Length: 141
Image (tube, rainbow, N blue to C red):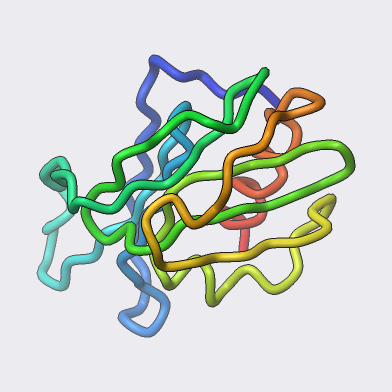
């Protein structure tokens, strides 16, 4: 699984109001968000870009997890997900934290509310495999 960091990928669709939630997931190198509207053809326009909300979380690149990420919009929590020798960190909405009970290839997922509460430790392997597993789970479930 490879993440195209410079190419936005947009999906527009219809869903029942029970299934539509507003959320955002931001790892610094990849961001996925969801927005909802409730009138005919209302998804023709892209939603406005979210502005910084003052929250800060650590994020990881291939070598370290001490990058500081400014959260935007509904991203009100920091995430730390670990897999076998891998760590993924970033900003998430509370709805994501409540939904991630069991993700394949992920040993633990934790969310916290304070600034930089998801700690800064080095990464021993590339985080892309873990990132792809978590993103695939969220998109497909």
